[in-house]
Length: 266
Image 1: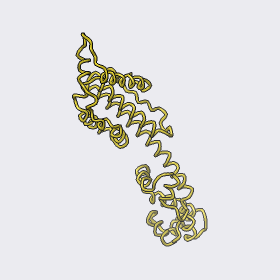
Image 2 (image 1 turned 120 degrees about the vertical axis):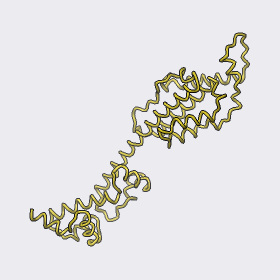
Image 3 (image 1 turned 90 degrees about the vertical axis):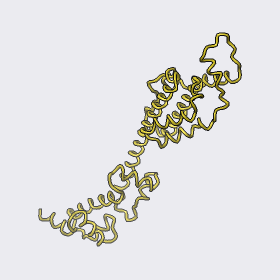
Image 4 (image 1 turned 180 degrees about the horizontal axis):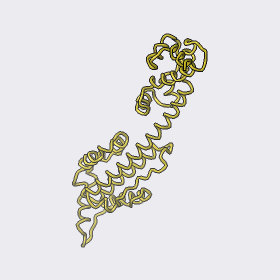
């Protein structure tokens, strides 16, 4: 079984086997070692908090690919080698990871940013249950696939959010009251989070990009209109013409007057 469409049936089988082993005494003259091993493990003695799905969900939310192996090692160590010697319990743990991971991806992919969110891995369930190491290997690959999909979803969300924010800034850059908060609100995101994402995606701060848009328009007006420097300052978003002149010279290497004169001499 390598696809999650088969998980529900296998999960139910695992739970039925666990119930059977706990509530019915197996009496077979030719009972083999595997059945004996399953009967020796008491599932009621397992600390339920160690298979809490919130532990997995937290890693799926914040974990890194480089941390997967150590997380899986720690998780399985907490369960205990004695418990994991049970094939049925290993199947239960694998089902636990599959269902938790599937539910997490469905939750964060509510807007269907990623169409293909297939969590199937190359290792079959029979192989995954064959030993503790194989179970760990299976879980590691499952988590790796989940984090890959998670990052794809995040990237799509960033792109959509940035597209909306940039579009708003290009349309409203000359507004005197435009700031990071107003743009973040237009993009439906918190100002603090937007500030970090903006700098990461654009390679410059919000203020730097806003100033760039304003200066670009100011240069066009200086070359293509006869408006005064003060009028242009106000039109591109600056109430103080002196500050506009200071900023213009700092960025362009010359004053608005000199920039216009250079254009007329060309």
